[in-house]
Amino acid sequence: MTARYVLPLPAQPSVAIAGAEPRFAVRRIFCVGRNYAEHAREMGNDTREPPFFFTKPADTLVADGATIPYPPATADLHHEAELVVAIGMGGADIPPEAALSHVWGYAPGNDLTRRDLQAQAKATRRPWDMAKAFDHSAVCGALVPAAQIGHPTHGAITCTVNGTPRQDADIADMIWPVDQIIAHLSALVTLAPGDLIYTGTPAGVGPLLRGETCTVTIAGLGSVSTTLA
Image 1: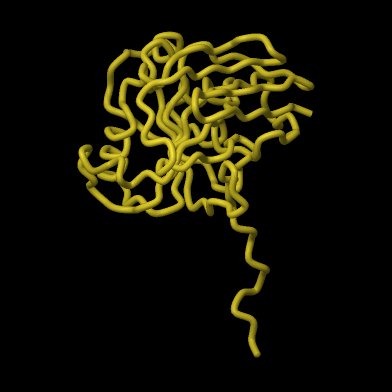
Image 2 (image 1 turned 60 degrees about the vertical axis):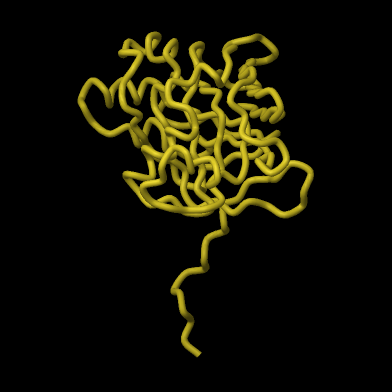
């Protein structure tokens, strides 16, 4: 019998589910840029603009407690604490009033960024892909089902590096809340079960050095820690 594929199928990316053995299979990762006013200001941008999106490959996911290599081609790796939204029901042109019914759960995440490469891309008006979508760049903690906790609209989001506070905000500070993010994104692409959305980071982003451990915590969702080898 002729094999269906010339190479073995790659492993299915997935994230843990809090308190459960089954895992959440991941299809795509979308990220929102500049979704907290203070962070937009610290990056030198206007505080209010339509949401825009970039992507990361699903196989860049990193689980809680992992030790990852310091990425190549950068001298300025940054942490970005974020609320992660997991889509359980797909759709296109989803109205804001129906958007939360498409959410399966939530988790703390960390959108690791090669800031120097991002600055170069901005200066030359080129895509951000190599600044954002590199190996081990999508840190995601265990998902907490919305069926258990509902849909959080406020709660502390913090980031520490070796125990020292770096970011301290509230998810209520998001310029575009989750329902609006889903409405905007689903007008651009058809969302599908298994999609993750990183919803943006508050002010206080900063560098990570080799040997440091970065921990992102969101009230009611727990934390996720990553160590740089």
